[in-house]
Amino acid sequence: MKLNEISNKINKIDRELLVLLQERMGLALRSNKFQESSDDTQSEENVLERVNRMNLDLIKSSFSRQLLKTIINESKRLQDEDRHLVAFQGEHGAYGEVASRNLMPTGAYIPCLEFIDVFRGVEDGHFDLGVVPVENSLEGAVTQVNDLLTTTDLKVIGEAKVVVNHCLLSTEATDYREIRVVYSHPQALAQCREFLMRNKLEPRPYYDTAGAAKMLARENPKASAAIASALCGELYDLEIIKEGIEDGPSNSTRFLLLSREASSEKRDKTSIIFAVAHEAGQLYNVLQLFAEAEINLTRISSMPLRSDPSNYSFFLDFEGSEEDSKVKEVLERMGQMTISLKNLGSYPAYKGEA
Image (cartoon, rainbow, N blue to C red; front, side):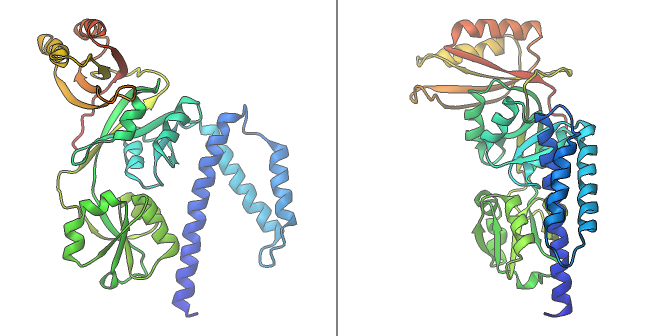
């Protein structure tokens, strides 16, 4: 093995150690939800005792104990900070984490495998908040999330729009001129189709954009790159070969912030879900209420009812709070005109640019 190969392997191990430490700290914060205090002396001693029994010829047990003791103390410090645990779907570096950081800058961001894990984790009190994508400017509504919103008791307390800025990432050891294969989520690959074709790069589908970046950093497959966010480049120490490689310039995703409690901030936007009888004019009659009250609608979409696929639920966002008198009146009248009506909550409208 050559010196540069040894150096690259050491750098790779160092990166993996930091990623594993990040994961461990997240688990320590999650464990705090299950105990009264972070002071668990007996458990700590058991961990340190197991270290003593490990036969590692290049690492002294005294060093191992001190290292692990430092890690445990740092975990306790984080637990004492009492940060909000913010769940998102995907690996670290996913656009869901980008949205989470925008919505809760001081939170602790916890990745989940599936959207339902985000919902259930917040509902059960394992997480304080959840961040989920509800619609994309190019692909439309995120069906799975909209479906989960119809059954959850969680409240929407905020929103954010994240510009989807796809980056071509590679390891430092990779010569970009030799890249032939690119890994990413199928949707991201589709959104960068022209770039891939123009540069004669072979797309390889992967379960997640951030997951592709994580795999690239760990395994460093030959002549390969990944399409993911710039945050992934920072987290996994990957080089950004080129930014903004998506074909469409106006690609953004809207995310919702979910909580067990309603928003206590100034609220000027509301989201509801409703269904009407499958009869002519019923939807028009409901929408007419908003027109008469001069309430501006910002989004309307539909999806089939689980109980009756021939009928639809309608997702409606509008300007105003559920505390406003005219909004209250419209919702009361809607309750008499619909077969179901669910108020997801009022929250501060997103003021940034998408």
